[in-house]
Amino acid sequence: MRFENVERVWMKLVDADVEVGPSSDGAVHVEAAPESAFSLKERSGKLSILTSTEWKLKNLPRKDKERARLVMRVPKGVEIAGGMKRVSLHAEAVSFGSLATVEAAVELRNCAVRKLAVGPTRLSGSIYVLEKTEIAVSMGSLELKVLELEAPIDASVVMGSLRLSLPEDCDATVEVAGNADGVILNSGRLLGSGEHRIRLSSAKGVVVVDTWGDEDDV
Image (cartoon, rainbow, N blue to C red; front, side, top):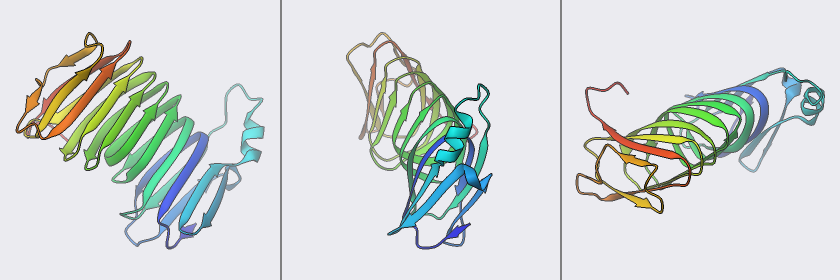
């Protein structure tokens, strides 16, 4: 399925394997299997992709949920937002305005995410921080490599863990709010000029901040 003139994409998905990547022709392309598992609507430049009611009802009594598959290609400049439960998500070279996941396995490669909220989730990958970025972990394990740091980061962990790797040549000031027992700063508190603020808080979780250099793989 091909959609023209899309400005933003909204997804609300359960029980699915999802792959998102860049499109080179200015259109959004969607492949769904089975097609009956998803409801797609395009209106006023917004494309909505939801797990269909039919699929939810079919899966409801099943102990081992059947998985649907969604592959989407998105042009540069089209922002994605949404919530996902019991999904695997692989996203590469796309931008998320917001992403919320529960009971998920997520891999982000060369992506941007302005608001990231996770429940029980295992997430890893690399991101660009070009606008203020908010990370909230209620439960889960996150490992994020920041490829470029050009804006502040606010990160909070209630339970679980967050490992944040910053470029060693970035300009950042690391601040710890509240309980500092669960925060480990292998990076130190000041990097470069300290222009961009990294604000961390941890309740019963662990936050580790370190740096990476040119010799490390991206």
